[in-house]
Length: 427
Ligand SMILES: *Cc1c(COP(=O)(O)O)cnc(C)c1O
Image (cartoon, rainbow, N blue to C red):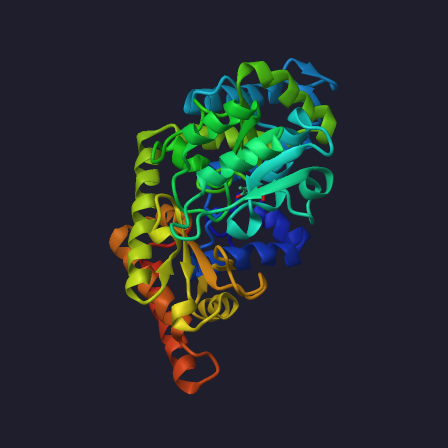
């Protein structure tokens, strides 16, 4: 078999050595090409990023930082890390950048390590209101080792309740205040968070894991002027390799670097760091700025179509790449909706909505994102079609003859749509 495009020349060697894993790779490529990818935290990296990631740099041990490693032979990989750092600084206007965190969660662990001691109070967005597990959930180190104080969205507007954030900050005097979430579709008022942090002398940490790509593409305001430290992933809207990164003010540089290595990580993944450098270069372009603007336009167009089909957009809409839809009015729960969409070739996730009466494993909503489809070249009109296909799938009663016929027919329309603008086109 000839290597499918987007697998390097080494693919034939993998096929010979390990046909089972080679089959996983080709099947996953088929899956990406065959359906709609609406998971808000996923994207489709470029062939250049894939090439850097799947490279001989995976071999090198480089504990330490460029110019100060614990191993010999690091001159070459130092160039990759220096390029990644310099490109990220230029892209975001950051004082200091650390590109070594293996993932977003690892970057977050380093933030705690740099600024807090076990038991310290941390003020962060409540998980069921859109926060992340690493913001104080009991199932994560963050909730086990620190005293998490959750803030919420306002019941009426479903926007962050900044009055509550301030009140809680004044009462609990947290060491760290976290701005940033995993299921919040609106712009965050970083200046308001800064003012509250200053009032109680807390560190302001912006967890930009989801939206850092929109910041890179200048589609939303940057937290850089406000935050003491910013953690991010490189694989969400930013469209780089799977990984994390940290940016901070110069005064915190040493604390952050030490918190990553040697406190919480060993040797850096130099192949991933090289791929991050590639992604930063790609993101520092007019093309990427157009991409980021299109991502937001597409999320809005998709959301409008979903609302016209009877769903309710939490907070009334979106300013970003993602939207949270409440399905209560349709009488369908999130888990059922996710399953029906999967049967129609649409991959998305069920999601709790603020003040959700349903348990998390069922949930009253779904979350959709536009980062991957926009990479495929979808425009606002395509995205409106995506919205109507999702809405039809959610309402098709799987298991009934009519429902299954409808899901089959949606699956066909999905295949036609992604066939016109495929992920990883063949030639
Ligand atoms: C995705 C995400 C993370 C974690 O990133 P991983 O790479 O999955 O560890 C952390 N914080 C927020 C807000 C996220 O959305």
